[in-house]
Length: 378
Image (cartoon, rainbow, N blue to C red; front, side):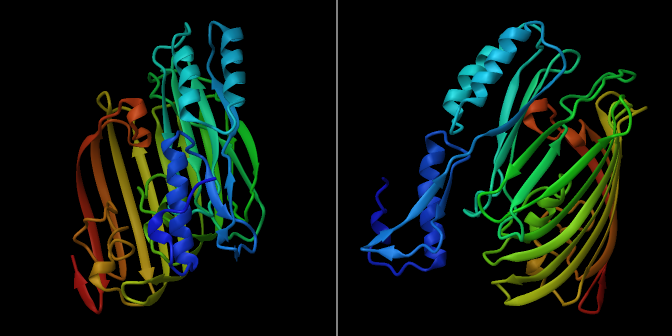
């Protein structure tokens, strides 16, 4: 049993204070290596004799997918079997088996990384899928956790996952293996994603639809729909509905085409006390083929529209942050706009992560025109 910190004693516990308290307790679990643990209030939680009843949900592996061939199949399966038995998931225990897997023959390198989802929302679910690669691909452990939809009308969450671990040599033909994991949410949240391999050489078609209410955080817009929603970060609850369609010819030079749409519902801003109905449409294409080694070309076009005028200081969420490159330090701010970007970069933009040893440097040009409060800005 964890004691309530001294600073909370004597305070009236409202929903905001309760969330703060739960996150503080949750952070104690994180420091002990329980990165998937969630602290939640019990259903219809009330204070009884000065006691606030909370519940801790333990985060566990949902699936482990092997891509490629290991020379020592027996030991690989045994280590993975042991990994699945780590309940609740704890990084300190996991690292022991990760070190053993790294030493197995057949792996060029073996690295793992944990990506946390939206830990700002104590009501969000998290699930985890571990990918292991070997053979021509560099051996990579990629642990990916997601927690981004809360208070969703529904009880189920499902994901079919596929990951590209490292750029293959041009001309390599590798059969892709899709792994599937289904998650039954302990609270009302949901997300659906479906991927179909069009052939055995890496061409992939992905369709993703989402609908829900979330307390998102800022993240790179290029990743996926949940990350776009995280641009709308605020203490209030934002509603959104959207979808994404991806066509990826992954192993024939890593050509990539991405189209996405997002519509927010009454997203409120505490700083301005405004409600917004916002639409965002984006097309992204990048090319990795027939270019100098480790270089890539990105073409991006975007269209955004808000029914209400936006003050310039809200551009982190809307005005201009999606135009062009979409970074928060953009000088472009506006309610309506059309924009684009051309990038020529070093490194693979789809694999922007330390686990791929991809250090990206790039030059870019933004082309954008927006209209704010009746004044056109370029």
